[in-house]
Length: 464
Length: 174
Image 1 (tube, each protein chain N blue to C red):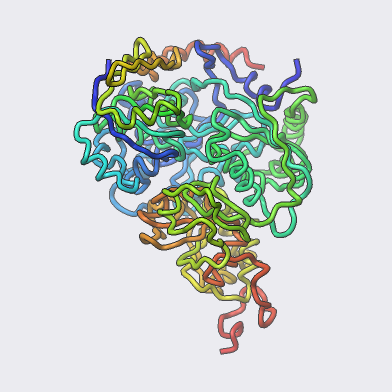
Image 2: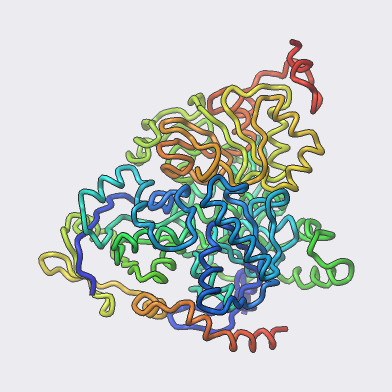
């Protein structure tokens, strides 16, 4: 019986079939952060003798609001910190932490073929490794901490083939927005998406994570990409991965994790990457996205338009913005920062711009490359790592009626602050828009006055 | 049996940021979140004020999409809601609803218009039947396993009781 990638991973983890198409599914890795974990840690302490199924399968991090912004968030961080210490769980904390979906793979905790859960909907990011990785609620995470398993209804399967190659300034983020706008915001509900095709093969791990990150924005349970040499190269020599022969033995096993040629899917979709151009969202969910040169659709949802202060037929290009944000679990990895720096080098931002690396390790690499100087020379704020402005929970909140262009994943009403309007785009488009103070693509930018090396002082740069 | 008045949420894609915004997720317990319910939804607080004592949400497609925050289900339950009636739910919210005694009732999209204007509804979770004013009866179906968690609670105890079996499975795992 030919099997898909998902089916191979699923079959290896079913402990028991349960009524109603559910399975008791074994969980290899639990990623635990401070917003959704303390409740479960407390419940296990109070009701189940503080006993975890296997602490070695858990990694924890303070990431959403770190450092804490107030007493309540300080208590969340403290509980996670004390629990990790008491249990002997690996914890990434202030000074060496990062967004869960950035730091977990970066530190080698995610492997092909694993089942991974996290109390965070963007856990689908990790499907980029050929893992079955999904977001769940606190109760389900607590159950996995307690018994090593989740109860899960077996999802349906969708295969998306992306032919051609990305070009014309289009990135993995644009591909993600394009897929969601094609499927619609809820079009993949109940499905696991398996991505394949020439464009997917050519993506780096960073780009694959960006693409898979947004599967949940089409309602998908998760997305998966079969591991290949790109995946193995990423993992080889990485912290928390075995070395030498032990690693290569894993590679041999991981090579079997791809769909059999005759594998069957409930839905199939083929898209062409070569025609893709930079995308931008106009509405209040990521499916409401169009090419940057496009217009708000004639049949646009009136409630979305009212919130966004737009009308059908409005051009997205040239729409004035008040703030720009580069960061989040979608686009805060080193390649995203490099792309932003390429646009910002030798230029100045025209609106308040916040750039937040996905982890402290990403921050250090960026600074070694001088990207922090590029950003700060351009007048942007370069912050420590955290989820940051993406969810309006701590810094960088967008004022009511203000418009922010963001490399994050959600443009929901109030997502970045009550009444704040969010347009989603790639880091390069966010950077170009930040410079011009309106939604713009990098190709619209005027030539840099002079070639400026990274790290040059503002005085030299602008001849003052 | 759930008999109650309706909170008509005439919107598709009510995401969990609208149900409870992230800046209010700073607690460490599941209780007391009802005061924050629908603070992120445009007009949400006015809507709640206009329907005091409502215990059944009626909404359009894809209710509970977005963030996995179980706080959304906790806030609804804390505010006295016992069911959400919609044509479809996001997966994670639906799981969270089952695990917190909040019935996720799926009915055909064509029925929602009438249910949005119904002052009250009667939902027999056990029999999987919804009765609208005037006596119109709609049937719906619940996940047979999760229905037990919905009616009796016990998701964590269910898993705790599987621990020996899971360890045995793990010992056999290649």
